[in-house]
Each structure stands twice: as C-alpha cells, then as structure tokens.
Length: 150
Image 1 (cartoon, rainbow, N blue to C red):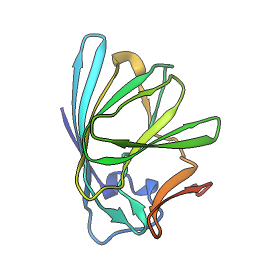
Image 2 (cartoon, rainbow, N blue to C red):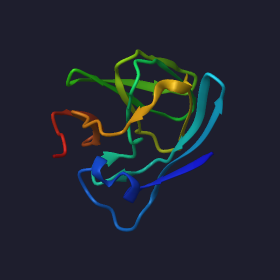
Image 3 (cartoon, helix red, strand yellow):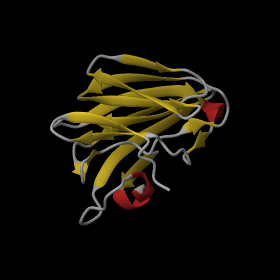
Image 4 (cartoon, one colour):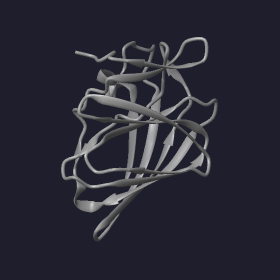
C-alpha cells in the first residue's frame, strides 16, 4: 500500500505553515502474517526552521520497531514519559526502538532520507503523540526541547 503524506495531512506537527501543500514523505507499506514492514522516502526540506519529519507515533501494544537507514541522514527522535532523545542516523545505520517509545524520523540532509522499518503486525499506531523536542535549522542543526504544539 502506498501512503503519501503531504503538509495538510500533518499540519498539526509543524509550528509554521508553508505556501502550498508539499509532499513530506511517501510510505510503501506491506504486511506478511505476523510482520509488517515499510520503505519510507522522507523528502529533504523545511517548513519555517523545522526540517521535514515523519508524523511520528507510538505503538498501541508494547512492541519494538527496527529501522535500517538505506540512504541519506537525519535524526530519529524517541520519547517516553515526556522525556525526549534524538539520535543522529545515516546510511547503513540500524536502530532498534524499544517497546513503549514514541518515535519519528527527521531528515536534516540535503537529499531524500530512505529507510526500512519492521515491526509486529499487531503493534497498532497512535499518531496523537505531542513530541517535546524539535529538530530545527538555526545556524546548523539544533534540538529544541519543550516546544510542544497545544
């Protein structure tokens, strides 16, 4: 299944508003019995000072997720109990998201960030997470904490 996420699909995630309705990312999702997997193509770009990012979610059931970064560079952001951490990722990196963590990917590079994600099919997705940190472009890449949209 192909999912195209444009700005209007996730406008509540960004602090600023762009002109138009740019494509932020495309997901190619597949399900095979107990395991789901997806290839995500996260475009390079910014809305205001914020880099393009995935919508971000946590799993409804406590399930892990594994990411393999195929191309590009950026950050993976994790949040649990209102504590947020950001980890730099690049081509060739594998990242394990422990059960119970909300997570999103941010493209801070100049090219498309492409990654594979794998997770149990029964994980479920909750997209209502309000992330406490943002990755912005302010004289280089900067992580801002406690900048939550109401």
